[in-house]
Length: 522
Image (cartoon, rainbow, N blue to C red; front, top):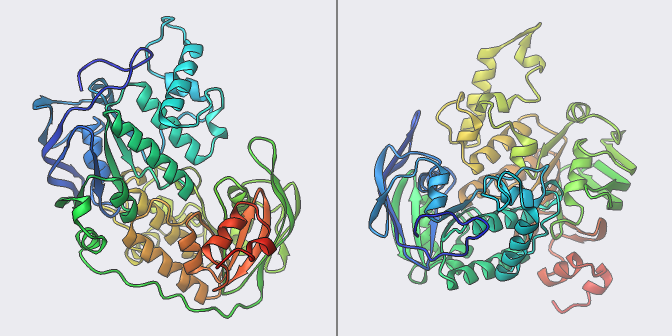
C-alpha cells in the first residue's frame, strides 16, 4: 500500500503485507495487549476472534493510528511505519469501520464522505462529484447507499454501509471491520459477506474483528484468537473446529441454555391500538395490540426497520405515541415521562447503547446511577451517600462480570460488551416489573451472551414481564415463552412456545399472514 490519499481521484489499491510485532498497550490498571504478534497477507481475510475486552479493538486502533503502542513495531511490505494519527494510516491505505460509527447525524451521506477530503473546488465542497463517486462505489461493491439522505434517517445497517463506502472512497487497500455484523440482520450479513468477498477478489485485505464463530469460519482464511490481551493461537479457518475455537476464546466449555416453560401471572403490559410515526414521517406502528404477563418473556421477531425500534421507544417514553394506549400493571402510562415510567417499574435496555443507554464521558459508577442518584437509599437529605453508592456499584460490577480497571474509568474505555453488561446491571438492579430489552446481545461475545441470557431467565423467574426484541431468531426461539412477529408496524401473529418452525416464522417476518405461514411444510 503506497503513500498518497484516495479522495476524489483515488481508486482501489492492492494491499501489501502488514505485520505487527510484539505490540504492547497499557491503560491505567490493565494491559490491553501483551506482546501481540499479528499479520495480514495481501488479498486475505484474517479474523481477530476473542471475548469482549480481549484486546482486539485496541490492537487494531494501534494499526489505524488512534492509539500509540507502548512497545512494538508495524511493518508494511517490510518497511517500518509509525502512525501518529488515523490520517497517517489512511495515507498508507488503511481504513477502519468502527463498532460505534464515526458519522455526523445532521449531515447527508455525501457530506459525511467528503469530510476532511480534498475538493476539486478548493475550499468549496464538490458534492455533485462526491455523490457520483459514491454511486460508482455502491454499484461496484453492492452497497446500496443514497448520497443525499441525512444520516440520522438511516437504519444502523445503512449507516454501516456509509462507513464502508467512506473507507473505499479514501482508497483503503486494507480494511479493518470492528464487529461489522453486530448491527446487521441475517439477510444483511449475507449481503455484507458478498461485498467482502468481492473486495478480496479485487485485491483488498480485510481484518474481521468478531466473536461470532460461525461468521468467522464462513468468511476467514485465517483466525487469530486473543484472550486477556494475549494472542493464544493462529489457525487456518478450514483446519480448526468450532469447539477448538471456543476453548481458545474462553478457556472453558460453555453451559447449555436451560430455559424451562414459565407459569405467567397477571398482565404487566397491555398495548391497545398503539400507533407511532417514524423518523421519516411515515407510520411506523399501525395499531399494535399486545399483552405481556408477569413471569414471561415475549419475543418480538422481525426484520430490522419494521417498527421494533419505534415500539421500544414508545414504551420507554422516548417517542410520543400517535394513538392507542399503553398500560403498566393497570396504570395508563401512554403520556408518562421517562422518569415516571421508571418509577412505575419499567426498565429499558436500548438498541443503541451509546446513544440512548450511557454517556461515554461519564465514569462506570456515574453511568450506573444515571436514573438512581436521587433514590432514597443513596441520599441523606440533600447529600449523597457516596460510600454506599460505591459499594453498590462495586457489587453490580462483580455480579454482572463487568471488566473495568476501576469504577472511575470513563465508560468510553470499556469494550462494547462490557458497556452492555453495565447497562443491563443498572436496569435489572431496580427489580423492574417490566423489562424492555432491545437487541440485548448485539455485539456481545459468546461468554457474555450466555451470562445475559441467564440474567433474563432469572429475571423472568422473579416475576418480571420481559419484552425481548431481537433480530437473532435463534435467540428469540431459545428464550421466549411466546413469539410475536412484526411486519411493517403490524403484529402478524403470536406463536406459542414450541410451535412454529423457523421457516414459518420467517414467512411471517416477510409479511405472510400466520394462517398462510402455518400451511408451509414443517
